[in-house]
Amino acid sequence: MSRSTVIGDNYPWQNAAIPYVEVDPWGVYKREYVSFVAYRLSTVNGFTIPYAYGDPNLWGYRAQNEGYRVDMNPSAGSVAWFTGNKGFHDAWVVGVNGENVEIEE
Image (cartoon, rainbow, N blue to C red; front, side, top):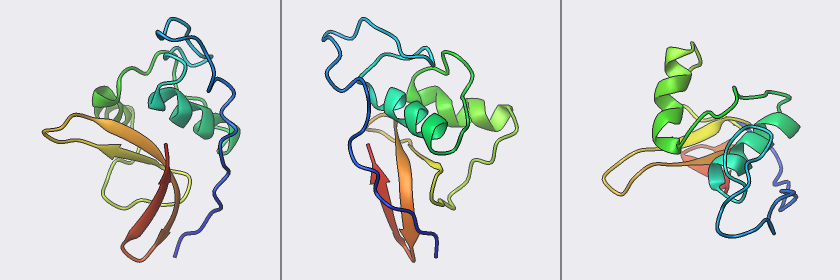
């Protein structure tokens, strides 16, 4: 069992301007879920993604090409990367209990 705790909404740019015209320190648009995930990776894991990592449709492929593990075995503190006919998405994995995966977006 992998557990963590929900941190809650401490994302610093939740009220940034719309339309999305400002980028965060990681080179992605503020208020986008990719920005939220980059923020969690940095503040919780101490990991900084390369600048301008891109849209979520690129994350898994790019991470795999850079040597990071990309698989179907989530753990607390990892990135959930969704692909499919409805588009791409990523989220922050808070914890795993059996087949239940808790995420923050």
